[in-house]
Length: 376
Image (cartoon, rainbow, N blue to C red; front, side, top):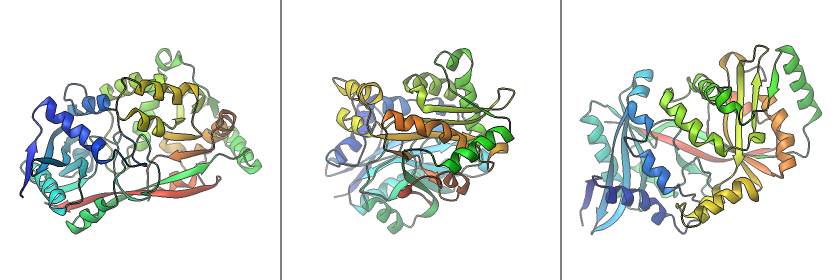
């Protein structure tokens, strides 16, 4: 039977697009579902600020009347202008283990992009770096995180059979929380504080808005992440949304800021309890009881695992050991709160500056994910 590709054109079809992932992975112990309401907002031109500089369409694949795949076709015009490229992104791609299905989905994205002047297909990527990106190629037996993609092992096999090649790899680390910081780490951190006249600041809830720290944090992230692969600077509307949506959920004990003598922010580390198991229990829904599982993980009975969401250092302070100050502050707090290990967010494999910060801790690189590309 022929594969039929259909563009999403109704709220019901968008719901089918979102739910397909949940159905495909409903019995998988490693996959962590997104919240359906969050996904609806992500794909909404009215609610997602990324549509200020992105355009997108979503496609469904059917075989014998059954839904067998999905994909988003995205053009991030800001990223293309920044990096002088003409790329169409494929994102939120899922498919059954049928090469014809994955081929038809990617062909559709390619045709969509080519009709808009693009010359390269790349992905999986989201609208921006704040979305999950990269197809898992190692670590299929590891629990996923809230901020990353999980996929079956046959996905990258399909990519290679269809002629896509490696564009970029990200690696992830499992980092054990030590019983105490090594004396050498403490000594170096204290030398860095004194040498550069820096101070560690613990954020108060009132300061997120009144002290404009929410804005300062994302301004720093914009500056620190600017050189990274495919990054497009967050707009003010995006920053406002992230400050409003995410910072109220963060336990401020798990946030570390480093400032210079004039009070300028030079480094930030944001972490939180892992929501992976809570999201699995919620099954993509806040109601009727999904909210309880998330609330419990955040504030009542925290898991033994934490997620390192964001680590950013002002460019002129990189390679000076300033990132060590974040963990000089946070590791004793993690131990006090009962965490056993942390999960890093994906880090570009070539970003040795970031990976060097884990050298003081017992760690293992347990996942790898990849962006693939193909000329159109």
